[in-house]
Structures are given as structure tokens and as C-alpha cells.
Length: 305
Image (cartoon, rainbow, N blue to C red; front, side):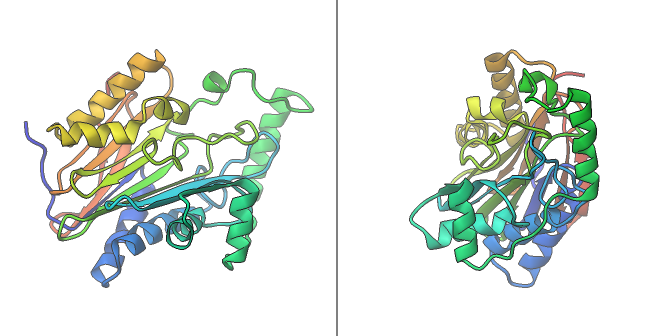
């Protein structure tokens, strides 16, 4: 069955917290803002919410108790920017956009990303909230003191509906031009220096005005191994509807990783407004906003029941 098309413009985002992202992005577009403004502002509102425990302020810390953030942003023209392993700034998505617009590079990490953010005048912020710190202390006590990194992060840092580590936002304007963005604090209690798929162009995010856009959520290491978001866009380029493309990417992930225990999901937006999503495990939700139906929170179909 052909994918249902939404009237342009349209915004889609991962998980329940995607509702605030799509509402904000839509408002920016309606007020005359650009696509980049829309995706940046949509992501920023999630980054600023301390109740979203896997993004921005209040995100879960790493094994050492420090919060590090990753983000990426991309236009359908191919322009993109990203930061990873960034400490001390509430809005990595804005730093990622500045990397795209003010440097000849795509990706800055760690101390280099921090120095760039300071040079660009971004305000420093405390990211570790009391709630996240208490969660880390409880986890550390369970691990023993001092707390070593878990012996197998792939299995012990379960990525599921409670630890899915991403907000991804895709927006198409009235002409079908596209932009997308991702932001995350990464897997809870990850090894120091770990970076997942979210800031990696082609893994966590890919946008192409000729075809469409896609973003990923779930176990980042698995998404990286299949260049998941790029795969979804290329499958759409070959004629697959968005949901079918997402399903094929999930099946590729499963075949490549042999994993049936963690969660992975993909969300896709075709340039004509068709939307699709698919996940390995049930429970992956996504938000959609357009003029005809307002905000909807939908459940993606899943490979496993």
C-alpha cells in the first residue's frame, strides 16, 4: 500500500518528546523562519527540558558522572555540522549549526568543540541535575566502588524505551526542501568518550532534497555499522516507500548485528510529505505535525512482537 502523504509543510520527530519538537519547528516555519531555524529550535526545546533524561540538560552521565552531549544538523543540499563529546553547553545543536556555518569542517569533538563553543560566545551551563546524579550514584553503588566500566556495554547498557538516547527531527517546507537534526546525551553510564550514531552524518541522520530524510534511534553502535539513515534515504531513492525503507534498514541491522534484545528504530520523511517509521522492538513512538491534523503521536510497527 502506498505511504500516506501529509500536506506540506510537515515536521516529524522521534519518541513522545518529539511532540514538543514538532510543535516548535512548525511554529518557527509559520512565523517565517528558515528550515534550519525550525530544526534547531525544535531540538533546543528538548535539550532544555530536564525531564527528558537522554537529551541535553538532565541527561544521564557517563561512567565517571559527567554529562557529554552529541548533536548533528543537516540541510537537504548536503551542508551539515556536528559536535560530539561536548561538555558544559546546554545546546549542542546550536554549536553543531555554527560548525556548519562558520568553519570549513563538519565535525568537532571534545576539547576542540568546547573551545570553539567558547570562542563563539556560547554560554556554559550545568548539565548534571540532582536527579541524574542520584541515578548515577545508585548505578555506581550497584557496580561497586570504584565503579569500573561495564564489561559489555552492548548488553548491560540496554537501549530501550527508557534509554533510547536520541531526539531526531525532520522537517519539510511547503516546497519539499528538507532539513534535519539530532541531539543526545548518549547511553546512560556509557564509557568515557563513547559516541553513538546521533552526531554521525549518514548514521544517525541523513538529508537529501532530491529524495527525503531519515534519522535513527536506539543502539547507536548497531546503527553506525549499517550507516542506517543513509541506507533508508538510498532505499527511498530506489523507490521504496518510507516505511518499507525503514523496515529494510531494521532487517539489515538485525542481520548484521545478530541482535534481538536491544532497540533500534528509523524514521523517514520523503520530500513529498510521505512518512514512515519502523523499529525492531515494539514501543517506538514518533510525532507528526501538519496543517491538516495538527500534532499526532503515532506508534511505529515493529519486526518483533
